[in-house]
Length: 361
Image (tube, rainbow, N blue to C red; front, side, top):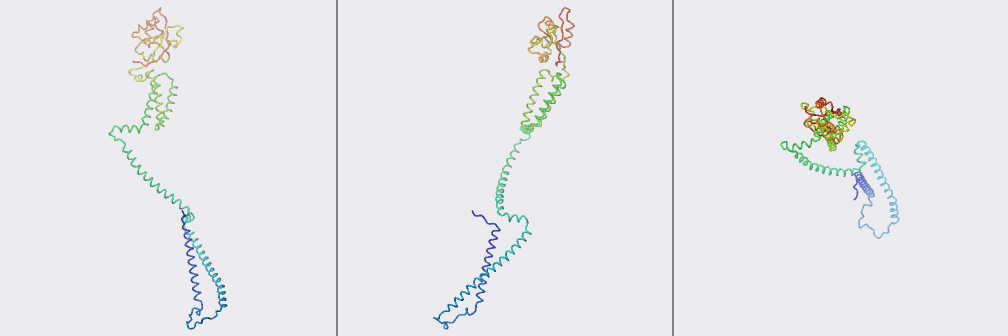
């Protein structure tokens, strides 16, 4: 495909055509003027009667005239050329003056357009592409609008039961935050109420748990944060279960009906019973009034112990002195009763280990 001509090229072509036309006009006018300057004799016609036939022609004169004409013609041509050159010079001077005026008057935007005429074509094509793409984008946006309306319409009404599920789905992070905070509170209460750990260890464990909980709460809007909160809740829930199983701290919160009582492990005073660990895999007798909490507390120290429960305290003491089992577990009142009723000839006893357990008042 041929390239389209720019505006400046078209202007130059038109100027050349005008110059050529003006030259032709000047040449024609000069030729007519020369014909008018010729003598009238040559123009006058001779009558037929006066014409002489068979007369020898003056060849010399003609040849001379022809030579003179040939010599004169180039001069005329040179004159014409000189005139043309003068006209060109005048025209070029005028053009230069106009260009200077236009440069002073024209804005920089128009000058840049004239200088970069070829470059204007490319952005024109790009603009067409942008217009087409913008139209397509508008169409796509118009198509997407009804989809958003459909999504808005999917929200259930407040009267329907699905509205509660919709609210829960949008506020899951709040639910996770509240769950992890509640589990930490229960965990901290358990650490305080069991009376099995020192204050320094309780502070260390609670500060570490708070740090991890703060991280989980900051990321609860994301699925990774929810997974982390679930792991922390499971860890704290497991420790809460163990504390409840061993120490029964939840019932202990009800101080109106429950309290911590001290219990004593009593054995015979001899060299074989030096520490609590000597009772591993041995038989121990106790009363059945609070046997579950007592057994769970003592299992933290001993392994494979066989517990024998009694309803009557006198039967328990008689079997102990007859050596049917290695030790007995009694509370403070039962220990006083035992020490007051020991016979003189019976074997001496000692307190091997004491601990606290939750029990009814």
